[in-house]
Image (cartoon, rainbow, N blue to C red):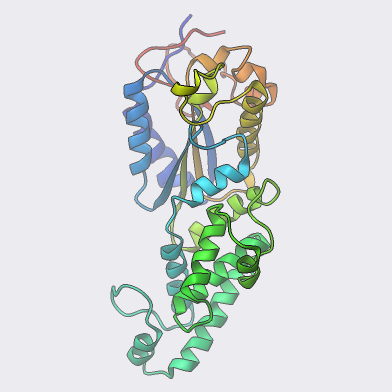
Length: 325
């Protein structure tokens, strides 16, 4: 018996209408496992996700180039794709708004002297007001992890242009977020003590989704491509490309997806499209059945198998269905 599939374009229109424009845009979170049937549909899906939702940030993480069984590697791969300076500037602008001194017009950057002249106030007093407003936004938000708050405060301070944080220190903070190797002394200088690791990466990811909304974005669309997990044996040395996964690492990757699913109640503005090849749906050795905790969360629901159910946790994308269990 076959299970109905839905076309990539149709599914993208569905998630834009039913998720991004409504539920996710209002602060919800969802994780969908997508079994994609052919290369053309994969291309349509990845291209569509990259363009979905004008007010969403987008990140694509491929198991072939990122060790997706490690949450810290996933976070840093996402961080490498974001414009942290622009996000910090958006928060500074929001702080000026809250202090009743909005940046005039559509000018690029934040020039406190120009803002002070526009509002006919003393530049030093304006600086003190906006700094207090930024600290109110960043430091008192306990839903952001401590390390994330420190990092974002430094980025916002640099945007003020008053010398509290230099461009070099700004780049240190951004390098830390992106998982770059940095001298411990440089990290201490900006108030950071440890690198991004498996212990702090999950709180950092949750903090990121909240930060995007603080910065005026609707959230994050994350495309997690797990096609490489289906490769059981590494090719000869000369033909290898990127990362390959043992069965243990594959199960760890499934555990990461399981954690994302279970964290949706505490996550803001996040849509995760987990792409897997159809072979992994029923493969007892390396597929979803090998990891019961995830399989139970995305198991096919009892519905008409002749009609696709785009609301389901597991959706088949493509022209043809896959054999059901």
